[in-house]
Image 1 (cartoon, rainbow, N blue to C red):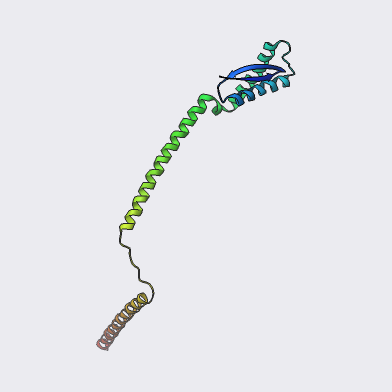
Image 2 (spheres, rainbow, N blue to C red):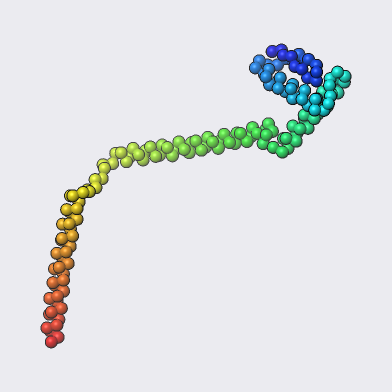
Length: 157
């Protein structure tokens, strides 16, 4: 245990605390000292009564704060943190599954042979050949239609 000196209400006190807790104990002592000053009290007389009054005021403020912020209380906060942790772990697991699924999809795509698309001169030549072929077929159909029309006209005349 570590020993440290605290000054509260104009009086010096020797306090024992755990190693590393000295700054926190000094801070808390300062809060009590400030509260005594705010109340206009000193510890020259009625030490216990004045310390009790300062402690009651601090406890009241703490209770008001806890009522205004219910998640800030110890058990509520712990339960809330546990719930947040569980949600974060669930989300992490879901994200890992998504990552694994996407990695597998990418690997499968890498295994597929690439589809080649022909662009440029060769593609244009092929399109021109197909267009000529369609034009020839349309011309042949037009000739056949014209012959049919002539035949119908001759038979009606």
